[in-house]
Every structure is written in C-alpha cells, then in structure tokens.
Image (cartoon, rainbow, N blue to C red; front, side, top):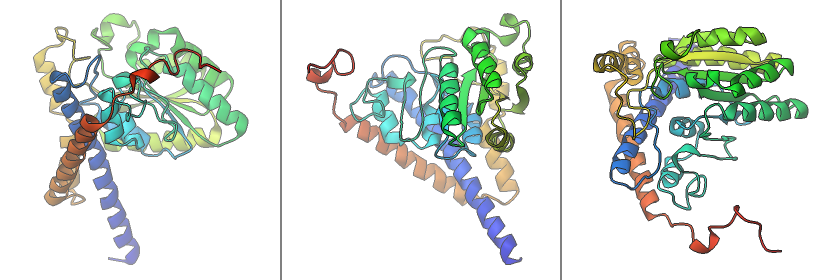
Length: 330
C-alpha cells in the first residue's frame, strides 16, 4: 500500500471512530437523562433524541467554528456534537449554576455563544427567524459563515417557517434548513395533519432548493450535508434538507404514546443508526470490535463524570435569582 493510501485509510478509520463516538455519546447521554429524570434529579420537560442521532451527527460534521447552529427543544444531541461538554449540559439539565445556560434554561434552552450554539428553542418554529437574523448579520459582515437551523416537520405549518424561507430566499442568505422529520410531530401522524406530507415540496414556492435523505443513515446524512454546506457557503443561498428519521421514545417523558403501533416502533428500531453503522463499518474493516468496545467504555466514563459534576455543582444563590429578570440598581 502506498503512503497516500495508508494515510487515507488511517484518516477513514479516525473519522469512523469519531462518528461512532458522537453517535454513542448522544445515545448514552440521553439514556442517562431518562434515568436521572425518573430519579427526579432532572425536572420539567424532557424530550429525548434517541433514534435520531444520525441527523445531528451527520449534519454538523461539515460545519466550521464560525458557523451558527439553531436547534429545537430536542437539542441535547446537537449541543453535544457541536462541542458543548457533557458536564455543562448535564449540569444545565440539573438546573445547576455550572450549566451551559447557568441553570436557568434546562433541557429545552441549552446555549453557548462560545460554540455559536444559539439554542435550544422551546417554541415550535421559533428558531427559524433567529437563524435568518444570524445569517443576515453574517452576510452583512461578509464572514463567510453558514447558519444551520434544525426544526421538526410539525413546524412547517407555523408561520415562522414560511416567513423564514421567504426572507432567506429573498435576501439570498446562507442558511441550511434541516427538517428532522420523525413522522409524528408531537403526537399526530404526518399524513393526518398535512395535506402535503412531503416537507421538501413546501420550499419550492420560495425558490429554495431541496434534498431528501435517509435520516437513519449517518453516512448518507453526512454526505448530503457536506455537499449542501459547501454549496450554501459558496453561493450564499438557502437550502432545505429533509431528513426522514424516527424517535424511538415518546415525544416527551409525559407522553403516554398511544398514537403509535408498537410493531411500527419495533420495525424502526431494527434500523437503529448506531447498530447499522457499526455493522457497515466492521464489515468493511474500517472499525473493529475493539474500537467499538473502547468507544463505549470511554463514553460511559464521560457520562458518569458528567453526572458526578452535575450533582456536585452549586445551585445559583437565591440573592442572584432576579439577575437578568429585573433591572439592576445603578
């Protein structure tokens, strides 16, 4: 094997390990959040990303540090892949002052200006106008940055979706709109709520180009995202990617999940993005069983450390609770 081929093989193996590490981190972090929620150490709302990991991992892979990310209330995975530490995210889930949002945001409002991760948006579709504003600022400053905005298929019937696509196309803004289409929004099947169930078709009226990808296949998602991000950065025009995926857990921890057939959920679980990726990569010889075991062990340790950090982290002092709420005395 030539030196170039050897280097390419090493790079492919390193990338495969990184992809798997991200997939496993998101899955194990979310599973631990469910445990901590049941133990009442996490309170309020909790929306888990289990089953949808390939979308965040694949889409965020081509982004640079200067780029912006806007996510929904199901955003723990996006935050972790973007680079926020598991400790800072878990502390936020616990409501501690050491959390990435100072303990004030909780599960649905993760935020880090350092990572240009601007939420965590609890309002359905609410992050889309923010994404357009970020992209407009970058366009005016000529930074060359791209803004990636995640939203669910339930958001496409909201006015913000149409306003955001219209303005992004009209002003030629570098926004990648990523629809994480899990088929049920909060609890209604797409076909029962949308006269036009193909989300990508909604963009045609605004002259926004689109693509559909299998959101359970991280390789396909990353390939599509790399093409799209490169094009949006060069042409400074918006693009919509519809990733068809599936959440294995209920909409939230309060959801009795009476709207889905158990056989359907079981069938989608057979397409688990982690298991299928491991199978493909090990069959190709890019990953080994030892690689997988090492990644699982390393992730387990990181999640344990995150929980320990969150448990030991301080609460915000009572005297500071009105900070950012009421005007400071001069």
